[in-house]
Length: 144
Image (tube, rainbow, N blue to C red):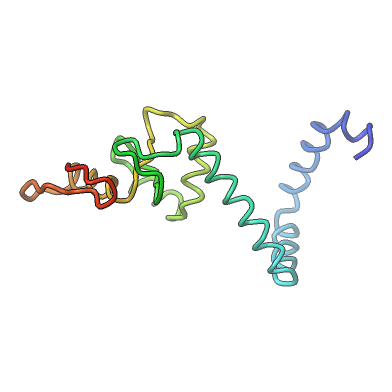
């Protein structure tokens, strides 16, 4: 990229966004053709994006479960219990939810990292109307 392009990056990005908005159908058709012709490139690009997204969120929330010392099989937990509504709005794709977390600035009062075991236990705690059960985390042995 030459100096002129570096100096006018914001203006060029704004122009490109506007052009893409006006030519939405053409851009979508081009993207479909490109994806069909170069599936391995598209897959590699998406993998790189998903890996960076996951690494950013894990780093922002400390890289371990908020309730136990587990560092594997981590998921985003909606502290207020509104995860089902969030997934419905985002068509259930995990990356869209994780991207929302990043876009919102990693709010600690709205989301947290939990391992699968703790996330399941929290779901039971919030939504299960039956008798209380004691659940033990298979990794750390912590009882809930």
